[in-house]
Image 1 (tube, rainbow, N blue to C red):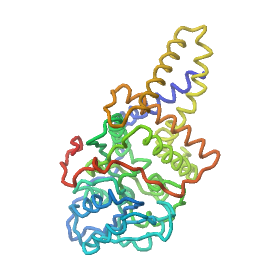
Image 2: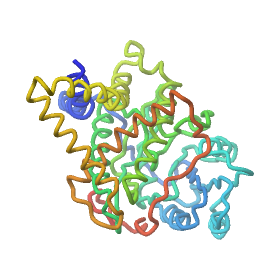
Image 3: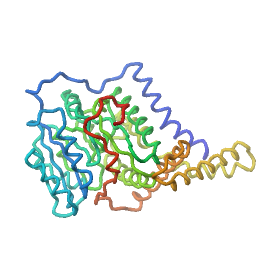
Image 4: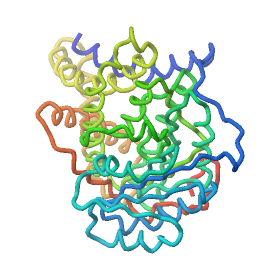
Amino acid sequence: MLVALPVAVGVYGYIAYPLLLYIGTRIGGTGGGSPCPTGESVMPLVSIVIPAYNEETQIRGSIESLLAQDYPSERVQILVLSDASTDRTDEIVQEYASRGVELLRMPSRSGKTAAENASCSVLRGEVVVNSDSSIRLHPGAVRSLVMRMQDPRVGVASGRDVSISHQSEANVTEAGYVGYEMWVRGLETSLGGIVGASGSGYAIRAELHKLPIRADLSRDFSAALTARNHGFQSISVDEALFFVPRTSSIRREYKRKVRTISRGVETLISQRHLLDPIQHGLFAWKLLSHKVSRWLFPVLAIPGTIGLALLAGSHWWAGVTLGLVAVGGLTAIAGVCWPSEKPMPYLVSIAAFGAAANVAVIHALWRVVYGHEDHIWEPTRRDPASSPSVHVDAHPAIAP
């Protein structure tokens, strides 16, 4: 039982669940919003919000990406939230004041979610697009999100992440995982909607965005849960491309995952009523399958490994499996220690990325249980040289 349970949970969360979604789409999905024809005369006013803390190397490229959007400029408010930056971030943002870019500076560091809460009073848009300083948007991204939100059922429209890198190939597995995750979200969209928006970029109705969120929670995850609470769907929009530079090392990605998962777990705990399948049906099933099963797997893997060790003396298959686990663990350690400037062998990358992702869950859950302070946001530092130009091809498979 100790051995079988983590295997069953892992296979279900990563293989069986997407397969069931796929079968559901073949049988006949319930839909997740559809593009609506629109003209510029009826395009809603959009507020684009970019939180920033000491992003002098990134913020100019971010603003240029937003100014290049194929959306009527008079219908766009661009607001940069400076979380009391101490570098040249504010100065660079103010250079764009004549082009309509606004700066809201927090008087002291308050954290990303707290800063977003404080900005709600100055947002003028009917739709709010949230992104990040390190992300670059395809010129058609905002228009694609807004078009899908003209469906009155849709409360949140999430972009499609495209993982890119020009310099570092130490974390190559991240691109494959991002593609897998976007595929799963596409299937969920075909069956009524997703359970979490992408932190890289998503659009949300202003009335939903302006509902206050606790400072220690994940706003992108909360967005989909809030939408559900108010009778809206959240969808993934494949044509709305957000180019995400890969982190330069497994260790840096690990730290990002610990922060993200711990805030995600806190967010789900605060909205745990949505896990009730009697009240929330398909949505609750997706939450349990997409989130809870993935968080549960590494926890169960600990007693599962102990079970293998106990069986190894009397069952050859347990000894072989335990040996493979040990080899995988050593390979993962090699990957974690791999120099970021050198290409990592693909199998080493898979082992290291998989191990880091699962250990990060255990670390994050430990922080949740024993208390932690994530109110003060530390953004993930990505290599600015790997951020793409705003002039990119529309095809999601092409990294600029």
